Image 1 (cartoon, rainbow, N blue to C red):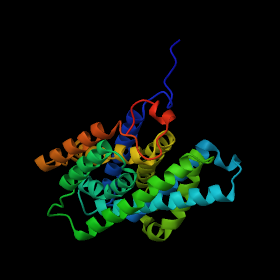
Image 2: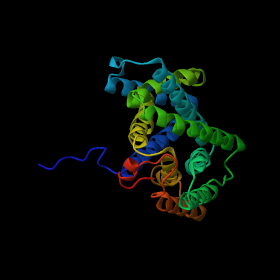
Image 3: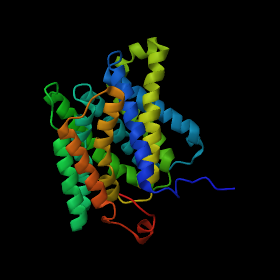
Image 4: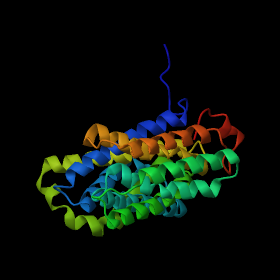
Length: 295
């Protein structure tokens, strides 16, 4: 009988793409909820609901926790929750693809720190060019939305750096669940006062919880699997797929038709992935190089 593929036998790129599509399907659901629930309220339900799902699935309370592991997981979760809150506040005012592209300044910053070869430098330049093209703010955009997207990018950089430490530590996915619980507590002051509509409607509450499953549980669990196998630099370059994914999901689900400028941005981002996929970053190892295609 043929064996089913495991996460270790699948290259990081396909895993990451599945997570990316799931993440922005969740974002599309969230956008439709903003007419009923404030973005801060949706963000809180998303993070808290995802934390509970992972903790229950993993039975994380059975693990023995060291104070240091708790501290790193909590810092990671706070960065993650703050990133979620910031990007929701941004996409409430900007098109999904534009907000995600501006947010991508965070991964570019992390990737720049790890650049050591001409190939990886060229990949970063292509990715940066794609982000610049995609990040043009339309008439309906506001500087407030741009500011929140840039803030989300800063927290995204923290998510990458702290996420690698958690993924490669003893806590791993358990650290993701516990971290999101700490992150939910950190943003509760923003989201809790906005939860009235969700608490009054079971349908709205379930939809908000669905954003947690689609945008946190699935993609961040996959991120932990991918982070465990590749360096921060290679992971940051791989994340340049996300602005293109956001635009495509916006087209398919929100009927946001991309302009020729956005199509050019997508092409530049894909070119960055092709260029940088075999470029080893700082801290690469022979074991990582033997894992097949990675970004």
